[in-house]
Figure 1 (cartoon, rainbow, N blue to C red):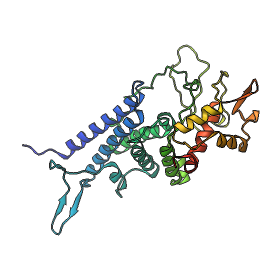
Figure 2: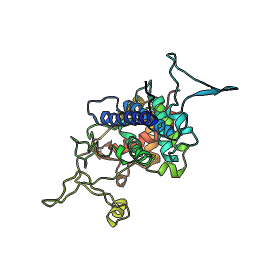
Figure 3: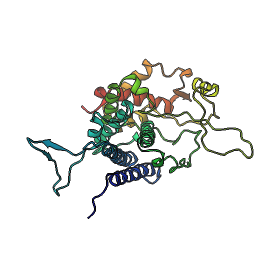
Figure 4: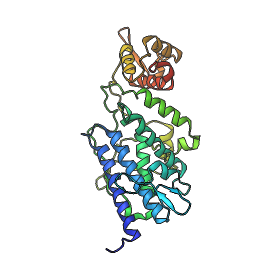
Length: 324
């Protein structure tokens, strides 16, 4: 049997890597998928692992586990006798890893998040952490282009995901935002605190965009859903300084007891009406100009914006409100 050439192994690794990445995005964008984050992370970890294996093979770096013996190396093997190859975290720790620090931090975060949600419910994180998932995808696209050339690009493979919800409106307007579970909130807080300010602010760690609906158009012009403008343009600077205004719609309202129940369901069983009252008084949250809520017939109702503030407060004080 003819010996397989090195390039054929590399091509096979890259093919597997690209397929895993495409499936990760496809599953996450599928409205019928329930476990979006879990599936996305598993598939993207596979995609990055194969990508880095392909790179190390191209650099003649052995990515198999082994012990150095007096005369030769003793390779680690599976029960069936196959070589044990580096997992993603070991690939990232290699001194010759081609990825920059924010890209590595993004992947370390996803690996740790997978461990946190592996045997626990993960409500709330599909939407709350999308900036980090998007950064992971964009980093992958940039890396595979840089290391192996534009012929391996996935940029043309995925179109913009069509929506049933108007992009100018807040999704799920009739529902309170789902709080992140206490164990996940603690993990996010501790991981983010370990980063330098530069890494935390890097778009390679978390990628965020500000959208506004295009209000005018002319016949014959391209009708794309999203158009990008240079970040140093006068329009971009104006958007950065001011929030574009859309027509005000009736916002969902919440009673304090509802908010407390949501926090308790999210893993903060010791959060109570007492602590909720202390928080809004401390922040003077009922001041009309702050936009946290509204009085209706002598009853105060809280907007989603205040629920987000309470979620943040609980996540920052897990030791106080989390399980005893």
